[in-house]
Amino acid sequence: MKYSHCKGCLACYETGECVQSDDMRNVFDKLLKAELIIIGSPLYYGNVSGLTKSLIDRTIPAYENELLKGKKLISIMVGGGETKITAKFHKEAIRGFVKYNKLKLLKIFNFQGFEANDLRDDPSAMKEISKIIKSALADISL
Image (cartoon, rainbow, N blue to C red; front, side, top):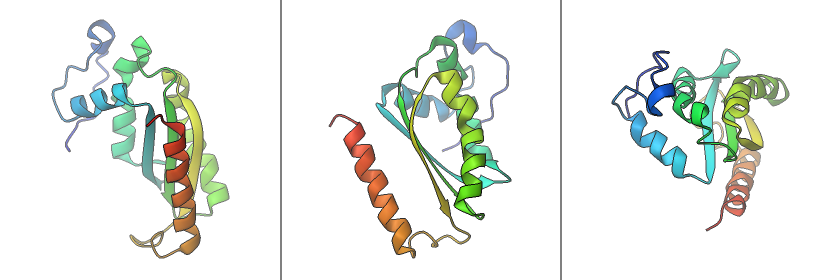
């Protein structure tokens, strides 16, 4: 997918839609229909990736009209540091998204990984990921 950064024009406050015509429109529609939102991102310099931040910023039309209010959120981040430390950065990175969109944060998960297959090759990480999936399925009505 390709989507641009928020331009900060605030036209969405009037129209309820972003003026940009890109792949974010499809993502935004799916967010509006979702019972549960799961965000996954690498942790870069104590924050979500730039792509994830752009996605969060592009939900401003939902914020103004409380369109995501009450939706459940699970956030997952993978960073190179110890998970106890990255958890602090993780909470701060999604704080505004949760607060302003009035989301219901169910849980955050932090994993340590440096290489592409670090989690896949870690039995304890795979066990935790399995728990996340089971928890997510239990939190939505099927």
